Length: 330
Image 1 (tube, rainbow, N blue to C red):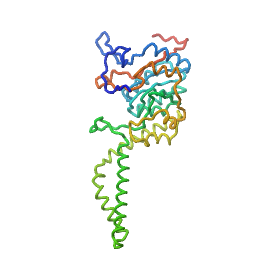
Image 2 (cartoon, one colour):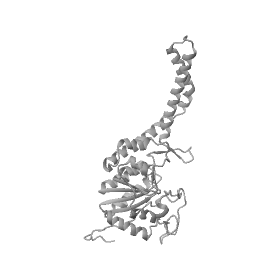
Image 3 (cartoon, rainbow, N blue to C red):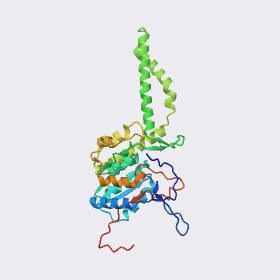
Image 4 (cartoon, helix red, strand yellow):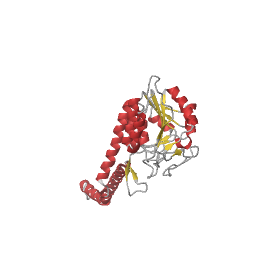
C-alpha cells in the first residue's frame, strides 16, 4: 500500500502520484492545497451521481476540528441531491469531528452511503456508524477498531490508545489474583494443618499486595479516568448515529470499541459483514470510480505542520445540481 504519512505538501502535477495542487494568487498569498481530480473521475462520478440521485464526495485526510466545519460549510453552501455517497480515507482523528460530519449528513440527506475504498480507521469507523449502508473495496477496503487515541508525548507517535490503561489494569488484576491464589494454595498444602484458612488468606493477600503494590502505584488514576471518559464519549456518539443509520446495534458497537487487540487491527469486508447489517461489494461503476482516484483512494494523507491550515481534505466529485428556476448568479 502507498504510505502518505507525513509527506510534504506542495505544488504537484495533477496527473502525478499525490494529485495535490497548490498555487499562489496574484497578491502572493498561498492558495489552499486541494486534491486535483481528473476529468475521468468527474465523468464517472457524474454517471454514478445521476444513477443514485446522490452527491458524490471524496474525503482523504484527518477528521478534526480544523476540517469538520469547513466540510459542513461547503456542503451546506450547495444545492443537495436526495442522497449522499461519501468516499472516506482517513487514519482517524477526533470523535467529536467524526460525529459532527456523520450527524450533519444524516440530517440533510435521505440516504447516506459510505464507500470504504482504502483505510478508514478509528474515527472513520465512527462515521461508518452513521451510514445507512457500507460499500467496501475487496482489494483495499479496511476499517479499524473504534479506539480513541489520547495525547502521550512520551510515546514515539505522540499518541496512545484509549484502551491501553483499561487493558493494563485488567491484565494486572488478573495477574495479581492468580498470584494470590497460587500463594494461598501453597501455604495450605505445606503448612501441615497448623495455619487456619483465614490466616493463610491474609498471608497470601499480604504477599500479593507486596509484590504488585508498587506496580499499581505507578498507574495514574487521572489518565485512567481520561481514557475511560474518551471511550465512553465514542460509545455514546456511536449509539446516537446508529439510531438513525440503523446498520448495526449497541452490542456490535461495543465489540468494535473493546474486543480488538490493537488500534491497527484490520477489519476487512468479511469481518465488517458481521458487524454491520448492510455491507456490499462495489458495483462496476463504483469500482471504476475508486480506480480512477488511484492511490489517494487507498492510503490516508496527513498534511505537514506548515500546511495543515491550507490543506482541504475533501472534494465534490459530482456537479452541483441547481434547480432550473433558480436565478442565483455566480
